[in-house]
Amino acid sequence: MALAAIFEETADTIVDRIAAEAARASGLTSLAAEFLGRYTLAVRGVLPAALDAVREADPALQASKLDGVAASIRAVSEAHHVPRLIERGLMVVAFRIVSEVVRRNASAHGFTPEHLDEELKVFQEDLEQRLG
Image (cartoon, rainbow, N blue to C red):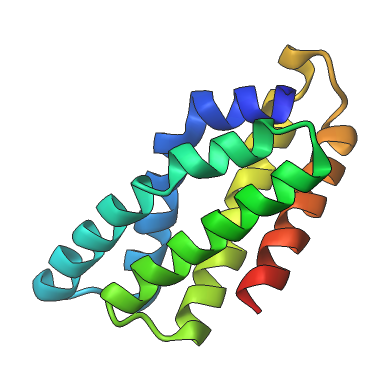
């Protein structure tokens, strides 16, 4: 539950950091920045389902919820014509940023950074497998 609590506390900041990093990496024009704003807004719409999946203690239910999260991510990418290679790159950036935030906040939730980072890696692998 600590992982979910950290996500909930920091989700908007994480999405903003991912968007900023994507913008910097691509040298966005104003038109592309407008696109990134729309895409980021759509990604924010996936956050409640992702948080719900992280909170789920039952493995079978969590797997089902992760299927839904992956489908939602794919739908956002397709609606915005984001190629799968770019989607994958954004996922890598996202999980790197999430890992930094989780490690930094772990002790405030009574866990070691390594423990929560391991939980995050399992979640990441499960989600990436579904998006594969």
